[in-house]
Image 1 (cartoon, chains in turn yellow, blue):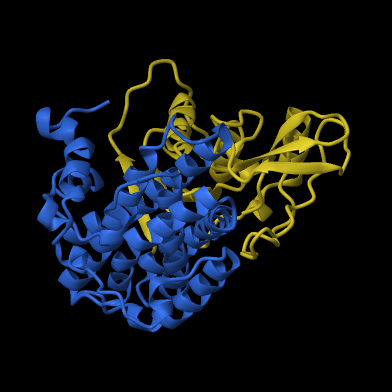
Image 2 (cartoon, rainbow over the protein chains, first blue to last red):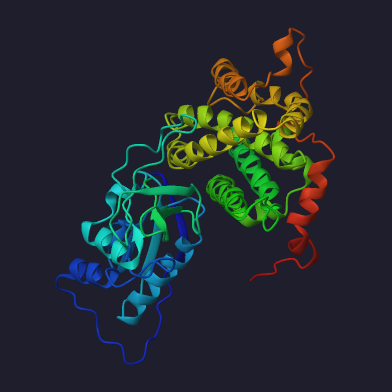
Length: 185
Length: 247
């Protein structure tokens, strides 16, 4: 299998005052908790909005969360894995394993519509459907990106690379505001 | 078989780590803010790729090996990176050219690697090639801007070509452990692509004049230029001075 185990936290932990996890509908309960874990870099997005969580497996007592990285060098991934464990520990789950798999490869096409809406409200232009990523032509025209503030399509790319691995930097030609674009990947 | 796979995975890991380390030296020193951010973003992508390769190598080696022990505790002669990526940053032109010559190669390599039978290497390549596509485009655009820019920028690019060209041949000379992708088969496609970009930049590769350039080699087998020792001295300093130190 193409997978790399991250830390494997299988030590039972004593948690005072934590409720007993429900045994019925466990998978759904886990997903509901995962929906509360946010991306530390873009806190309006949850990891389920981003499409990072690929699967939840119940191996006897152990809960295994399968995640996939967005960018190989994204420093948020280690933090996300830790936050998943903390969120589940808080709810009383004890045997948690977070496994990172690379295949199939994450794409911005997996971002939920809800996630894209939240991104735009936050001031970051959501990713266009993937198409031009592999266009390696020199000086290929930058993707047409809508300004998240005034909705104009008259924008231009300032830099392919922005404040984090997942973003590039644009500026609106109408309202003049610079903004981040969550680049398609 | 397994030891060949380990060596090959380490070669991929070392090459991406060392280029990442070199590019990161630009952090805070780029010619303008956006390009400082660009080169360090590329550095971060390469670091992510190298971590994936090191983690995989560590799982193949087993025992006490970890991604950290492989990056921080191996000696210069154990590193198998390409000579090209350890070369000095020089000026912006030389850094750009080094990135372009390597990224163009990496793109062709990962195209093949993502189809190989080793599932983990294929997965890492498929993941990474999307980032590499950005690196190729960004660096080739800069090669054109500088080559076809002012007399000063053009002269610097010519100097960079003269400096780096001798390290490009090694990419296509297969090491004993390089059995998964035949790199010698990538040479023609690489030359076609690189020649097209250099021509767009009004630059000529040295071999274009007819005389072949002597190609340096040895990096894949642990024989490096003088630069690698200095790079590792900085990269490994904390772990060497304070073994086991953690954040």
